[in-house]
Image (tube, rainbow, N blue to C red):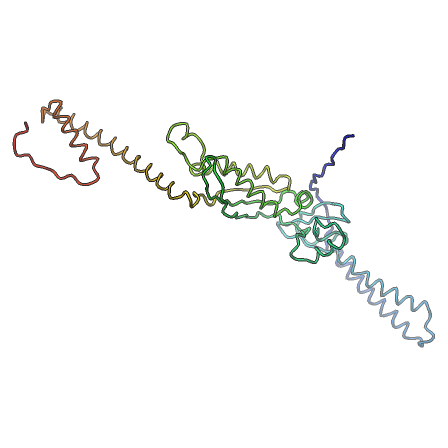
Length: 338
């Protein structure tokens, strides 16, 4: 026997709530009438002796008091929605829709105001979660403004296995209030956990830096040299992971990237060696060009007629002068050149 799983994905749908000003005026008028009815019934009962009050007068007074108490029930249906917020309407566990318009509204007073602890299995646990400020109860008023999640520094291994420290900042907002409240247990915690998981995954896909200077390595994407590409990959990964929660990612960036302390000194020496090699290479290329230019210019202008041996000696001396780290001390030859 095959068992088909039910589709638990919820989709946000709009809900049109009444503007609250008309209902507020109606309830105020009704309140005045009920107060007047209670006063009139009380005066009517007070006009009789205590032992001869008619049953109808007492019943009228009790009914007016009950109606006055029941007046508070529709008064609980007022709510406001600020710009950048949305109100999710839930009636006895049934999702009715979401109010995204801002303003003052009135709706069914039995609409839930909080979801309570969604993991609570009994009525007692649900009532406790509603009164416990530290529980994971969510309000049915959901902020759809952009939020910033500044992640902590994580210690992970890159593609080459080197331990690195990495951190990111994620800008996100709730795009589907129904999915955010009903498809995940606690969407702020879900976003925080998935942001950490996505960052660990992206850090393990790329190397921290190029390990060699060959062409194939230079064409690969690394965490240090390709920040834009890595950020786009992180954003795409977060979009895929947060879609079930109705959350959209506006931006994702790396805020911290460094080698772990245990290998940072060795990697620093490696970077210093690469910088020295690159500088030496540039100096040698420039020195060779200058020596060639000097020897060629002297020969073309007829200043000196040097044979191959003298040209080699001059080139050697010029290379020492141009490539040496300390200043050269010139020696003046007062004798013959040969």
